[in-house]
Every structure is written in structure tokens, then in C-alpha cells.
Image (cartoon, rainbow, N blue to C red; front, side):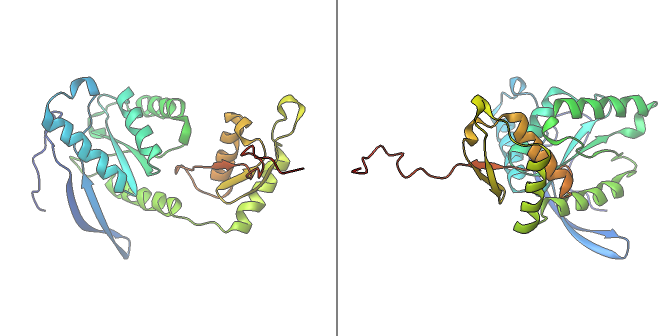
Length: 247
């Protein structure tokens, strides 16, 4: 063991992101890990001094360069609105994510608390339903091995590559099972996908159908709860610049 930083139950003790390189024994396999312990993010209304603003920016920079981000919750306080705002930021940056309930050793009746937070996550963070929610105790170390196992599984899903052929076979099945709508009686045509989906009138595609495609892609191609972004593009109209063709 090596003492690296001062910790305590009070919020705001950690002000800098601390990077630690270490190895985790995954059965007979040794995995190298770079762990970045960041300063906690408080509600903006409470962030008023310059040092804490720098700490918040330092944490955001760590998120930008991370592969897997663990959102550490205090089990004695449950899930707060600020936690969902942080999760949304992580999602927008395209990082894999895990929620972990710390201080689980202090909880007497954990099942209702866990189920309540699970339901609140699925409702309040619907962009990635089923994001992992784990319990652990930093004081006793219980749950840390499972956290590391899930972190590597999540990273594997986050970095998975899919061939164009496999992607388009899924795409064809998705369109056949649920064709795009036809606003104004004119069908929206989606032609092919490479995580950029090309088609006509894609600006009229409802958000509900975009979610259908994202959720189907996540489920059918085994991406789990990692963020997925689909970009929709229409073919360029050669006459859209308004110039006369001379005809």
C-alpha cells in the first residue's frame, strides 16, 4: 500500500486529479490500468472560488481523455440531479460509463435503495438504459474486483468494431421490422449505414425512430450500455445552390 492523497467523508477535500498506474490481477491475467481519481463535481451554484472552478475543469478534462468513467455515488445520499448532469456530460463525450454506489457497507436494507436508484437511472438517464450499477465499499474493498471486471467488459464493448456488412445486415432487418414513417404521405428512405446513415428527408426523421435504431444497434450488435451516435445525412442536391442549369 502507498499513501497518495488525503481523503475523508467531507465533500471538497480532493482538489486535483491524481493519476495512478497499477496492475490488476484478473485471474491468471495481469491487466495494466491507469486510474485517475478526480475532484468531485458539486452543483454549480456552490462552485464559487477560483480553486474549485479549476478543480471542476480538471475533472472535465479527465473525462475527455478517459475510456471508462465510474460515476461514484454516495449510498447514504442516493442518486441526485447533479449525478445525472455529470452522466449526461460523460455520455455527450462518448465515454463508457459505470455507476458505483460507495459506502454500501453502511447500508442496512440495501435492496429497496438499489432498486430505487436502478429505476431512477433508467428513467432519468434513458439515453443508455441498463448502464451498469454496482455496489462497493472503499473502506473494506468489497466489490472492487467486480467493478474492475465490469470496467474491462464495458471497455471491450466500447472499443468493438463492426464490419460494414454486419452493420448493414442489421440495418436491413431493422427497416424491415419497423419502416421509417411517411410524414405528409412521403416515405423517408434510409438507404445504408456506416454509423452515418444516408437517406432522403432525414431532417424529418422523428427522434423516436432515431432512438429505435440506436437501441436496436446496441442490442443486436452487443454494444451493451455504451454511448452510440448515429449521424444522418442526405445526398447532396447538385441544384441546391440555386444556379440555373441553362435548361
